[in-house]
Every structure is written in structure tokens, then in C-alpha cells.
Length: 462
Image (cartoon, rainbow, N blue to C red; front, side, top):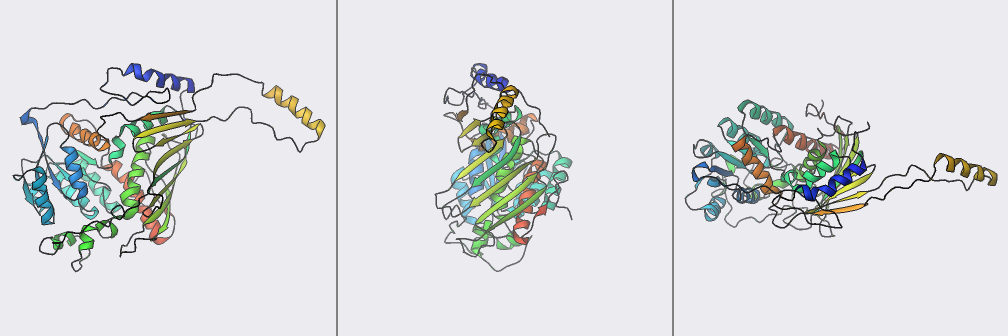
């Protein structure tokens, strides 16, 4: 399929005009190599004291605390309650957010409170669906950490609950709200790199904590952890602190490298390309270093076939995560088209533009001498020399000083949706389109075969 695209001249003109057009914006990305990208930051809003949004954090581990602290950066937001199955985290919640906040081990108590407008659902993956659905049915808005669900079928139940209740529901793959990815989406839509044919992304790490060997508190025991509740929707086992505090390593509670990290990469790609997802997935890898009893690989690679749709041509995606990357860790997000590539780093975006010349060149050395001369005449007549202004081949855009980051933008979008009815960036359907293929990737890894995925109906065909 040949995608409609603007002329390269129009694209360059648009980039050149961006600084002047947004001169009144709050800030703009730094000028680099004679190219400026203006991108307004979210204006700071002020709300009356009685107009606050009151939130509760359900699951106050590392992600929950990070999410809640970011949410509190948004004007008009306060935290009033916290829930966790480990007592020490509830103590820490009071230390961070005030001794008067309400704390409990039972999330249902949170949902019954009239003074809570929204929850941050940052529990282990196997609790995401039930807590999110219960919260929406109780009239709460939900910010749910990725992956949205532990199993594909749960995703359809979350979508159903969001539609039936009309609740505001945001999945927490926060990168998609970052200005780098917003810009990449604009560039792709403008045809800046032509027709997409390939994408690749890498999320490597090189540390014990990066490989999910989290610290286990010295007081961890069935007295300080509600182990029975934690296991109440999965396999019953004897007390094992690793399965509670390092849950990402175990299939009963987590989704491994694919569900935890690949889901970010698919979210980014789907946001930029407006894709519904792949239709074929193959994944391989292994346990190369962190042989600590975990049930998931510490190195995983995935290949995804994306079919042609109304929003993009057919293309291929390759993903990788290596938890023992001796180079020190690596992040890459790259989209390739037939006229260039876009690369996105942690705080920058670069675009490299190349276009195949109309004249293909000659390979005539093996021809007889007289045929070489005839071919040269033919070639010169078919491809007469033309002269055009040369465009910049590389541009680098960097995030501005003072930018609060993608997670802040993601929460701002969530709260704006609650206040103003603005659409969230990642609703439940988006969430399943991102995590469903990663769950299919796990199936591929463990069954050692390619897995089909239906991107329209968001299912693995039987």
C-alpha cells in the first residue's frame, strides 16, 4: 500500500516555521544543528481548594509510590489513602504523604470511601483486572499500571467495564505522553520518512535491581504480609517472600520481560503509527545469568509481523530485552521508512533522511565495450542530470529544560479527562492492543512456536 504523504519541501517548511508559530508557548525544545522544534508544555493550572481530586494508591511498591508522587505534582491533586498487603509499605506511605492518610490491606475499603475520586492501581499484574473493574463499578477513575492485564481474556472484561461504567481509565505506559513520541507521531503522519517498513526497539539492563532482584525487608513474614489474600486468585503456596517482593519473576503474578517491558515498546509504536497491532508473533530467548529460581527469561527477543492497514503499510518489528547487557544497558527505539529513519532516546529525537535517486546507477563493466558505450548513451537520455536544493539529512531535537517528563504528562492527561472530559491517551482498548501481543509473545516463547494474533478482535485465534 502506498501511503499518502506530503512533499518533502512542505515538510521542511513546516519544521522551519514551527519556532515562529509557537513563539508564545510556555517553552520549546532546544535548538540543535540549525533546526528548532517548538513544542508547548502543558500550561500550569490553578484549582480552588474545594476542587481537588483525591486519590488513593493501591499497591504502594516502587511503581505505586513513583506514580503517586508524580500525580501529586499536578495541581489540585492530593492523596488521602493507601493500600498494600505489606505493613511496612503502609508505614512508608504515612511517612511520605502524611500521618493522617487512611491505610488498609483491603482495597475494597478504599473503594467504599466517598472522599476518593481515583485510584492508582500499581499492584502485581495478577490483580490489575479485578481491582480496576471493581473500582470503575464503584465510580472511581483508574490509573492502571502496565500491563493492563495478566491474561488476554481479562482485558476484554476491563474494556467492558470501562464502556459500561463510563469511568475514566488510563493505562500507565507513560512514554506515549512524552513530547518526543508526540513529535514522532506528527513526523510519521507528515510522511517525513516515507512509508514505514521496519521498526526495532531495545530495552537492556545491567543491574540486579534492573533484573528484578529487589530487596526483601528483614521483617517480611506471614505476620507482616497478607499472603493469603495475595494468593487468593491464583495457585496456593507456602510462604515465599521472593514471590511477593520479586513477583515479576514468576508467572502466577507477573508477565516477564515481554509483558513488563515489551508492552512499553508496543505502546510507543502503536501510538506513533496508530496501529491496531501485529498479526503474527515469534519470541525466543533464555535464562542466561539470573538463575535465582525465576520462571521467566532474562533475555528475550521478539519478532512481530504488522499487516497493511488504513493507517500504515505492512512492516516488521524486532524487540529485545537483555538483563545482563555487559555494555551497561541500552535503550533504542527506531522506525525506518523508505526515505529515512526516526530514533528516539530518553530525552531526544533524531531524524535521518535519505532518498533513493531516480537514476539507479550503472553496472556495465561486464558488458562488451561497444555495448557499454551504447548503454551510456541510453542512460544519459533516460536519466538526464537534474539539480535540486539539497535538504538537511539529519536533525536532532532535544527536550527543553524544565520539562517534567512523560509520566507527569500522562497523569496530567488522566486528570484533565476527569475534569474536562478530555480523552485519555491510553484507554482499556489501547491497553489490550499493547499487552495482548506481548502475552502472545510469552506463549510463543514457552511453546517454541509462532503465535497468530487477531489485531481487530484482540484475541489469539483458536
